[in-house]
Length: 177
Ligand SMILES: [Fe+2]
Ligand SMILES: [Fe+2]
Image (cartoon, rainbow, N blue to C red):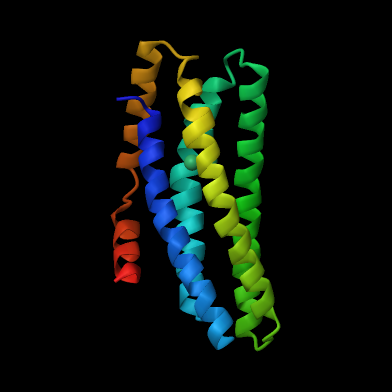
């Protein structure tokens, strides 16, 4: 098993969450109301699962390992884009959280900002995931020896052992039902 297969599998959960966000956006447009609890769940999912757990391995282990290698110009460029997209996602999630606070403080006009921020996330993730799944992860493996790949796989598994993703699997199952 290639280490990136772990990352590719995690993308499927992010895609399921993106679908739920799209459904919630339709509800917001229809009712002109924000369900603050959904925003709390979304902030936690994107911040904890997508960022700390998933991007944490991408940046902290894979990109870190690649930074020790001489990359092709294309791969170097994609890795930089991916890193910037992670930073953009982080900022968008921060803004989403503060817009929710503004909305809860009684400023109804924050609804428009919340919708825009959710839209930014549901547009970013499918594009970002496709870039990784189809254009980056597999080529990135060619820079590592079989032994380095095995070590990376072990590091990914150690990382995941310290973090339970069951909560997020469950949250998504509940929201989907
Ligand atoms: Fe990523
Ligand atoms: Fe990813």
